[in-house]
Image (cartoon, rainbow, N blue to C red):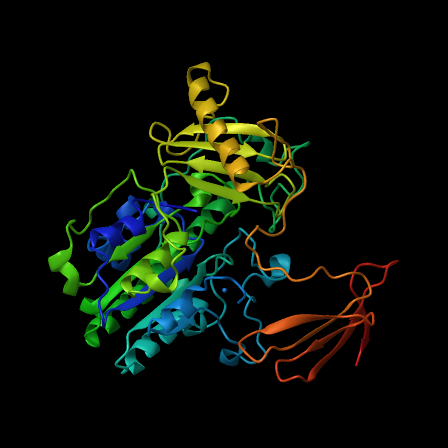
Length: 486
């Protein structure tokens, strides 16, 4: 994930690490929001006036068993923490929340096709998340600061905006479609291309029908317009509660769809803003709206910045070791298809991609070619640049101790198998065929898996009651299989 603009960590430094005793933190996030879909980045401001208004005031920035957990650290620093981002069945008991696009692929979660939302506007996930955030702020009368994360489901598919918002978005409001180059021709869905490419609703790549693609884009941007309206309502509530001038606000996305998982700008480049509150204006030595393009930021910087604001860095001495990064490293393992398996490095001006499955290399000059139309890896005039970035990736793998699967004899290795978990993922003892695993309350926050040895897996609820399903694995049938409903 590569945000547009400077690092949040550098912004915090520019604020003289100003820990405001009663300043709150609002973290706004939209799932699969691409960087150029907001007005401040060049898109029509008609679609995102509230986000754009904040952008004029903001600095723009390019979970249990983990050693450091973001909300727990803030709680230890005296913050009340809350997260909003799920649409509960209680809103429509017995109804199918995915009914808008179920007729296409069963649930529409990964479909690229768009249709107007089939239920009332106020039942849309965007409306639910927005209302819950407003309600939290309206009911907040605590004397302690809070950290509130508001995570909108959309514009992630299904592309299902309310019909009233879809009617407001016209073709002339959309950014131009771009095609060109030939490095991506393998993903067009022609014979011999990776499986899964084509015009099916759940395809992960392919050249799609023009009319349906246009409709999908209209639906995508209509969902963004709907999100923007609720962000405006949230900001209005902050002002009504006299919290706006005491609130740090961070806004970002995680990646773009369709499809996530790529190292390219349309997927990995997202918007990121930071607005500092007026109460610290006197100690800020940069102007609002400042862009520092030579510094790169990413989602991992959000926690660091919040720790600075909350005066909580002493609780996590291993965080923020410095110095600041020279470039971002990006990595993705197999999903959708075995070929979506790569590592990449970028400093915002150049981008190097090693596609581990093929294996091959891509090199883009983002300054001259921001839409990545031309792969320069075979361009003789860029040979030294290619060697520089390849060496940087090799050195990183060696420094991290990735082992011979990644580098041998100072050479990048082809990897046709993905890696399910990163090196920092918490893992317990390995589970052998025949082991029994019981999911039960650990007396703290979440359910846990416990190893036993009788050959069955029984799922337990957090109160210790059986959920009524019994599974087992054996040496001859190592996969988990349903044995009985208890």
